[in-house]
Amino acid sequence: MIITRHGSATVTTPSEREIVITRSFDAPLDLVWQAMTTPRLVLRWWGPQWCPLVSCDIDLRVGGSWRYVSLADDGTELGWHGTYREIEPRARIVSTEVFEGFPDSESVTTMTLTHADGATTAQTVVLHRSRENRDGHLHSGMEGGIQETFNRLDDLLDITDTTAERFRRVAGRFTDRANDVTPDVTPDAWNNPAPCEGWVAREVVGHMVEWMPAFMTSVGVELPPGPSVADDPAAAWTHLADSLQALLDDPTNAPREITHEHLGTVTVEHAIGMIMFGDIVIHPWDLARAAGLDETLDSAIVIEMLIGMQPIEGRVRSSHAADVGDRLVADSSRARESGQVYDLENEAGTPIYVHAKVCVIDDIGWKSGRTT
Image (cartoon, rainbow, N blue to C red; front, side):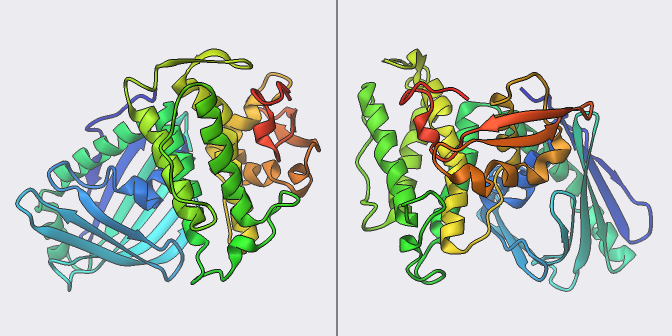
C-alpha cells in the first residue's frame, strides 16, 4: 500500500502575480500523470468532498481544451475551463485557466511532475494577470480546498495496487479505446484487420466477451448476459467490464473461493487478476492499430507484466516506462507462439533479458499450463 502524505501541500507566493502549489505523492510518476490527465480518474479526486466534480472534459493536446464542472452542497454549479498551450507527456503541462464565476480573470498554470527517492512531486505555478487577481484567489479558501483535493488524490493512489483498482484502470482504458472505434470517427473500423493474425477489430472484443464469461461459468460464477458483439462491440465489452468490476468491488464475492483444474483453489479476485489482466492490457493496442488510432499502453502495468516474465532477478527502472509498451507489443511479439527477447536494464544499469509470448495471452495458465 502506498503511504499517504495528507495535509502536506505547500502554497507560496514568490512574486506579486504568482502562486506556487507543491505536493509530493509516494506513488510512481506514471500513476500520478494518469490520475491527473484521465477524465474518469480526475472525477474521483478533483475538488473537496463538499464540491466534487460532476463533469470532466479533457482534450489533452496542444490547442485542445479542458473543462471541469463541480456541484456544491447547495446545488450550485461551478465551472473552470482552459486551453492547453504546452504538453510534455509525464512531465509538464502549460494551460490557461478561467474560473467561470470571474470570466475576465484568466490565469496561466504550469504543472510539472518530477520523481526522486520513490516520490512524485507535482508543482503548479499559477500566473495571474494582476496582484489583485492573485490575492482574490488566495483569499477564496483555496488552500483548504487544495489540501482536501490532494488528500483525495493520495487516497486514490493508495488503492491502485488492489486488484479492483488495477482492473478499473486497465478495463477503463479498453473501454475508452472501444468507444473510440465509432462509425463517425473510423467508418467500418470494426471490420479492419487487427494485429493478431486472422482477426478483425470486432473479433478482438468478441474474443474477450466469449472466453471471460465462459471461464467464470466453469468455476460456478454466472455473469449477466449483455449486448451482442455483432450489434455493438463497445457496449458488449462495457457490459462485461462492469460485471467483472462489480464482482471485484463486492466484499462478499471478491474473496469467494473457486476451484479450477489448472488454477487450483483461489479467490474470484485472484482469478480475475491472474488470468484476465494480460488480455485487457494488451488488446487496446490491437483495437487502436486496427482503427488507425494511437495507443499508449499503461506503462506501469506493462512493467509489472515484464517483471513477472523475467527469468532472472532484477527490476525494470521506471525511467524505461515511456517505451516498454512498444517493446511489449513489438511486431515480432504479435505473432502467435513467437517469442521475443526484450533488452531492459535493472536499477544498477545491468542488462536483463525478458522473454515474452504475448499475442495469445489467453493461452497461458489455466488453458495450457504454459509458463514463460
